[in-house]
Image (cartoon, rainbow, N blue to C red; front, side, top):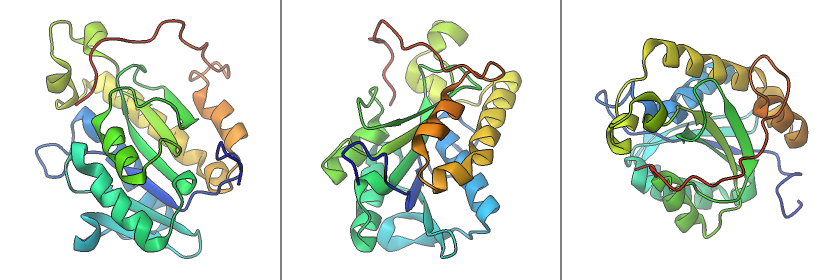
Length: 218
């Protein structure tokens, strides 16, 4: 396995979100939406596992375990760390799927390691794994400075997307699910090029020249 995870085949896919019906349709639960779709695609039944503080299920045929932590976002690492230790899953074999403020609805970014973007779910996972070196699939939800000026980030992520935003997010999740065979095969270079391209262009977006300093996620 290379240091950047490029040879790793994923064994654990984690969707980030908050538990309960009050949060199920909010922007912060985009990671849950992807993993629920993946579970349906692979025929995986998700059951509550107290020892892992989450809903989880596995496909032996695919060698994949899906996990939806039920600890609330900022304690997601408790669930991920417990399951990864139990099944001896290396960080580079983990894909964490989460919402991303600095990406527009409808867009995706797949990357290995790097910064956490102020996302408290990722912070807690990194603390429990003692590394940032795991895969992340970021699902764009947009930033309130562009979409709801005057709205605090904490309020924005805990509200439902507008209808057109939800349609774009759903389309992005569908694209990622269509690309699942490449993810499952560990074909990271190819699938990153595919998913990181802006929808309808086939071209990967240019890297931002200015780091965002506002509105870190809760």
